[in-house]
Every structure is written in C-alpha cells, then in structure tokens.
Length: 93
Image 1 (cartoon, one colour):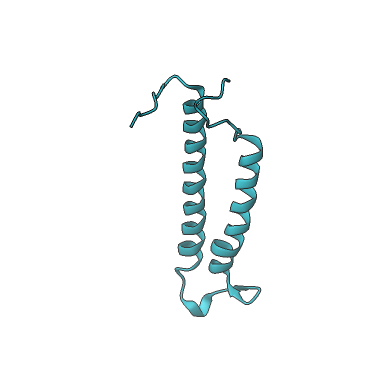
Image 2 (image 1 turned 120 degrees about the horizontal axis):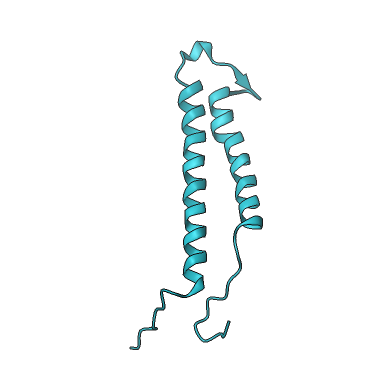
C-alpha cells in the first residue's frame, strides 16, 4: 500500500497547528473558569451558599454560565480565527 508523501512545508500544517493551539487555549480557559468558580465559591460551608435560579452560585457560574460562555467563545473563534481548507491531496491549491 502506498503511503501519501507528507510535505511538512504544506501551508495546511501551519493552519492546523495554529487552530490546535487556539483549541488548547479554549480548553485551558474553560478549565480555569470551571475550577475558579466551582472551588472558589463552592469551598464554603453549604449553609453559606448563595443561590442563582435555585442552583448554588458555584454550580450556576461554573457549569451553567460557563457552558454558555464557552459556546459563545467557540462560535467567535470559529468565525474569526479558523479557516476552511481543502483536505484532498490531489487538489491543486
């Protein structure tokens, strides 16, 4: 079976690496957001919790609001920073 010839100078590798770094940045931001709110607000005694929409504030901000923020951030990143590139080897670019 013939293996395709991989050209590391292909512009698609630079785009893929840039997008992978952006994706890792989003994951790290998501974890920092979740950890900060979950353990920052959730480390109190449960009798001292404040509530948002019937949920403990730490849960609301880390899981509910965090999800909404991440969906918006991913959408923005996809629209502004990600590029649609052809993946076919035989397509002339």
